[in-house]
Length: 247
Image (cartoon, rainbow, N blue to C red; front, side, top):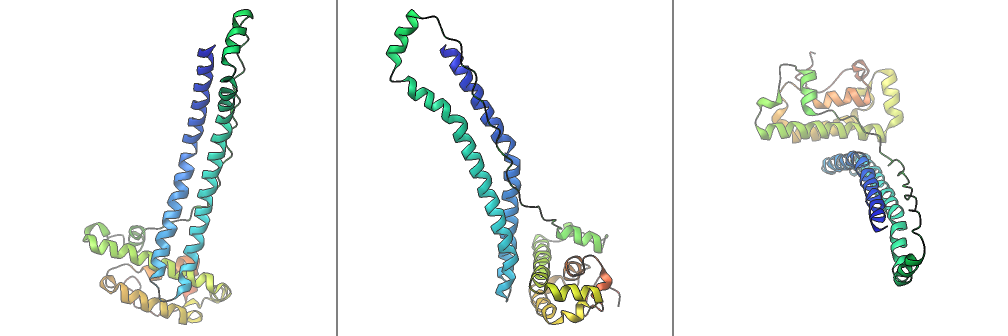
């Protein structure tokens, strides 16, 4: 009888462990998204405009909420799955002597059915955002240019420039959605959004002057990808010096 009980308890623990392992990957992805949002928030905080931190802050809040919800679901599942076993053990302890006496007089009862393990519900995951690295931008704009050949400090500077330019364009799109849409339709983004773009470009040039002469322009790349939604002609006349454009 005790061997059967131990076997059932072992099977239950195995089922709980398997459920935890199955949900480990979604939790890891959510944690990675939170880490990425936090990195964007740190980059945005260096901007001269406090509103630049808003998009990254919202993404961090979403990822943190999803991670908390997933952990809550798993903890509740483990508590519900293991609680019947604990209750049964507690109920059997005070009546142990009486039970042993009854066993001597009565035939051995049938083994109880194994407890039913309720599968945990799916953990909500934030929609993963497409992340383009500085290396991918460099390859797209200048296939012969590789960041791997640069010193470590310059590679880090390229990665920061890529992130700062991306955050700047996301902020403009978030804060001026109507103007961005009209500028894209009329193909005059650089003219219609010039005041915000000039401020962002001034900060970009100040921080990344050391790599401005290298054949990659993260500022232009993210302006096309985020503000123009991939349509380079929607920029109009690009007013900033760029090593990847022919004027």
